[in-house]
Image (cartoon, rainbow, N blue to C red; front, side, top):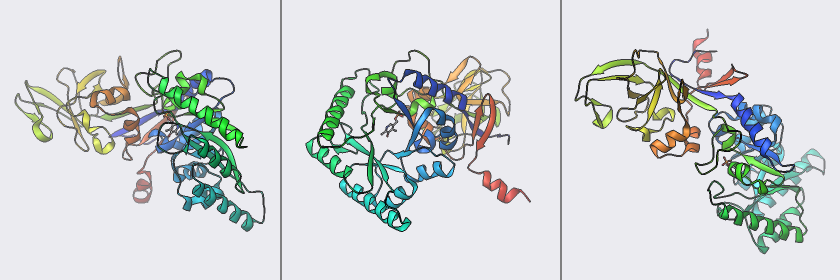
Length: 402
Ligand SMILES: *Cc1c(COP(=O)(O)O)cnc(C)c1O
């Protein structure tokens, strides 16, 4: 493996497998899991995560056609569902690649039906089918059929279109991650009532799925046929209000860098843009080559800290695009090339993504999604490095090999 000397993210695939096992052990009845790997697997790398969770899942969920195709082109064979809206003009691709869209309008459904029929004509067969999952709006007001008689009639009408098979029907919780589950349970009741209405209209659907990570962990009664595991795959809890009971999830991503420069500055010196930090004493400053250009949150300016030699070093002044400065006055012996942990554990100390979110006033889901293309991912399985994902790897191939 290439030795990274600036910054890299460690992705612990053993922790991914552990988290899947923890969730599997908690599933109600015969519920199966859908692995949500949108936004490149919440920034962890969709393909290596998908391969790791494959033994645990019935299928995958993503946000776009491109994400679905990326999985397929990397050999993922199980069904893939697109959770958001897909434009009707892309129906042909959905049909051709057998990607499951979330459907909630007649216009989408008719376009897909037409695309399947066209494909069948071209292929000289009559049994090609497009599998869809109907989205139902039970309280998010985002996408989905309206949760009433009209919506139920529309669902049934979509199910009667030629070439269309309604494989699944789902809804999404807005507030399952809160201690008070009354809002989520109202959504659950609306969903069940809606399923009753669609059945009365003559539509029966094999797969019902509702639960996100929060509901997987805390609302066992909503597991039904399948659940959609997202943030918990990556070892994070949906919110601070979700109880940490039983087997704990393990964090998957760590973030590492190295000291590039160490120096003493006299009392009164300012550090970084805007001079927001002014030294009250002679201060030993270490420079670390990571910044908001790597997705390290700028809102940690003057608030966050990093780990060096097992100790906390506070961030001095503003986070720059590519570098930060930290206070190492109280950490003996810090020198150039010392490892720096921005997320993860170093000795007794640990910095979690949740801590970064809390400290900076950000959101933990967003922090991992935002870790950028400039940060190579290093994958560990069975305790050893099994691969890397490096956005600039092709550069080395093209320019540096003779
Ligand atoms: C992103 C998403 C999920 C996963 O949510 P987590 O909170 O990460 O578990 C599930 N369902 C839908 C519809 C989503 O958009």
